[in-house]
Image 1: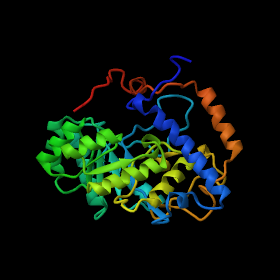
Image 2 (image 1 turned 90 degrees about the horizontal axis):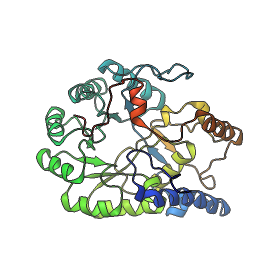
Image 3 (image 1 turned 180 degrees about the horizontal axis):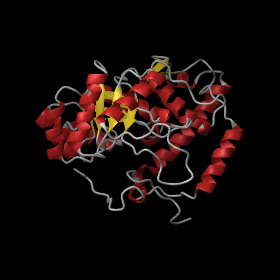
Length: 334
């Protein structure tokens, strides 16, 4: 029906077909691989690796949800340097991650940089990344780059737009990564011409599926760009699909991102519960397809949750105003 299709904030209406196609492609490749008694990765040319590395993904956060009746958040508040280091330590102890990413662009830039410095001190030798989500101006991004120096493995989407990222790279020489300014092959070509980014974070959900993600990786190899993979709020099916395509990409240069540790254990829909992350890696097996089975009872519970929660459209501004009534959407924020 007209008007019923909406996109989430930050997403592009032009990507709707790619998004929909990806979901069907994964399902049909899983079905095809099962019918052949092969793991899905074999339909992608075979596995280069069977363990896919992921990074510890840290977030600034309040102590608890603003809305009732959510249970207390076991992760607690993470606003200070000490709290961010504690969050990283808990995540690394639980999952064995070997690299760390901090989602930024929420608090004062100088404070967020000080948190990176604290992480470097607490975890010497760990590759570090910061992702301000395009919330820093070009001037702020340059200033923070001077403070960060060589602390970063890469600098992810600090400032908006291909032109801004190009100028930032020229001014600082730092390797820049993105999932925001290179989201299709036209933007890829323009980025190469401008030298806007040096690492592309692929995401099969947005790039049109697993095979288009492989094509993206080949283009990155051709033009000398690094490859990693973008995080998303995925359940085990999506995470395992991501792992299978990551296993097939020869030039996966960096640990991938994932929100999976933030998912509650009772909100998984695959049999056996959450996928294990061991030594920072998700493993793929020789089981047919994705190697997963749906837990239909759990799927029913989450379906009931969807219908009872009342949320049908994501509204980040409204959510933030529950914590800070004066909060307004401004980009770049700093």
